[in-house]
Length: 111
Length: 113
Image (tube, rainbow over all chains, first blue to last red):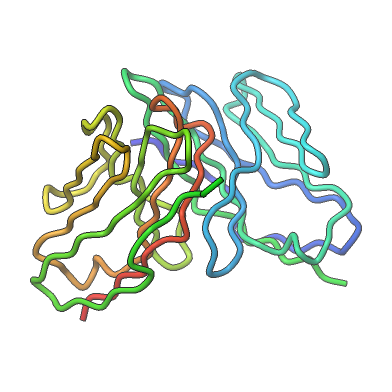
């Protein structure tokens, strides 16, 4: 089956920039989404890349490179409230699409 | 504009029992997907319902079944509960069977004792 790899934990300073990487399996790959989940909360959609390149949404940007089977989420001007888990989720084609989530990256923002 | 709602919030069941969880999608959405999330893990895809039919299924046994109603709401049923079924069950809604942008409900925390 498909699996996604992300770093398990990242720590960054308030105001800084952090990049969370995600690698995925290529076969049948369709697109890459990113979700944020605070402890005890539900995942919240952040961004989607269906094509190679950068998608920007405010302080968050996401990048996809199909040739490298790789994507990343970039968070700028980090705030304490950005402390959460971040998941990449790959969708795969084949009739109706299936989606596989990564195991998540726990981001801790420190003062 | 109501988001995705799920009920109940918490549930405690005994091994061998059966459970039904409910989900109402975000207004304008017609597709419901169900996920199981263990502590510290990413959501695991159970299945997706679109046009009242199961369209995709993850690696879950037949003890997990579902239904989608004409108003797009959905139920997840789990039979013969095991201790390992204890998890947060998330419902996500989207439009037209899409999975690239999903909106999640708050989840149902199921504990099996």
